[in-house]
Amino acid sequence: MLSHRRDFVRTLGLAAMACSSRKLFAQTNQIEDLVAANKILASHEVLDAYGHVSVRSDRDPQHYFMSRSLAPALVKAADILEYDLDSNPLAANSPALFLERFIHGEIYKARPDVNAVVHCHTPSLIPFGVTDVPLQPMFGLAGFLAAGVPVFEIRNFFGTTDLLIRDQAKGRALAQTLRNKPVALMRGHGAVVVGASLPLTVGRCVYLDLNASVQQQAIALGGKITYVTPGEGKQTVADDYKRAWELWRRQLTEPRP
Image (cartoon, rainbow, N blue to C red; front, side, top):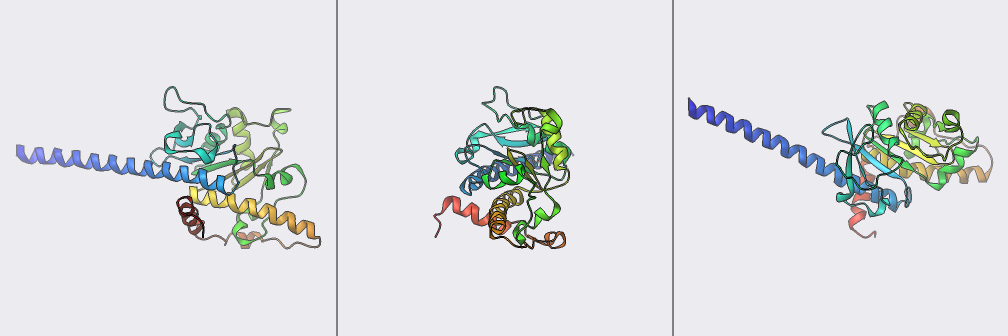
């Protein structure tokens, strides 16, 4: 009987170790993917020295991962920090943090369906946030834009500011403007892009940038523009950009042909 009890306890211990190992492996994969996302977005010039990308923790949905304050192209695994949804780092004596980390925490609070967030200052997007020309989908890979693209006007909430999301209140206001959409423009400041996964969100960022450039080209040509319809937009990108994600990950380590 005693032997059986020891075997049972040993089995429980091994099961607990296996579970812990799986969680650690999952976290390691998330961090590797987040590092890759930083570099992919930098290589596509969605992010430059500024902007940031985060991913919600698989282990604890009340936490998220994002790098310390650093140019995205330079991010390594050791630069990734874990935050709670109030955007406080869990580690003591953390290095310099992104000032606008509140964008991420407040969106994760408001949107349980969102598991990745990008804040960018991509130049192609700026004109659509400062004019009355709406950003609209030009082709299928940007069909998600057919859901509509709200514009966050910070003056409507806080008057004259430096346009930055410096605290939780401003992050909440941005999340309210985003509502259930995948993208919100920020007047004079760029955009926020969200999705249910990191590959999906990165793909949206890349094709959002391309779409904005193509739309400006079409407007310059003159004449009537036929945009992707909402019905068409719902049926696009069935693979969540997984093929593109695999290509972009490969290109980080292999030279392009």
